[in-house]
Length: 184
Image (tube, rainbow, N blue to C red):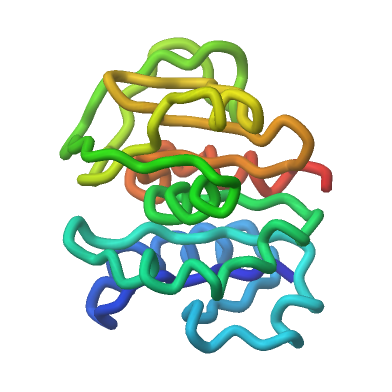
């Protein structure tokens, strides 16, 4: 079972940030369940073998006030895909710092090496006001696979944790299906 963690405060944002991921799951025929982070249960966590953390809207930072609710992610050993706000959650859990950094719309990104089927120059859809600071703490724990002025794609050095600041559910949907092939 794949657990999709919805981090949207406003229920209307589900249609923009969560439902497209669910549609990809339906097309892949992978069994999944979607839960808002405030409603997660041990049954949800114990029954899943991979996790996708969705993004949310530009002004929604409610999840960042509840980081302690995500501590279980450091213990989870299956693959994790963290999108935008999800990337901020993962990086915060691992001690990385955030900074102001805004990108909105289609942006060109250069991938160094292969990252969930992406390589070379690609156009991605970005929608964020906060970025991850590129410092020694980050570099000790994550490999950087793409950046612009801001970091765009990371992979944890020891665990199958993939983080992207852009939204593959909008553009580059194949990246999510590639994530479904990652071994834990």
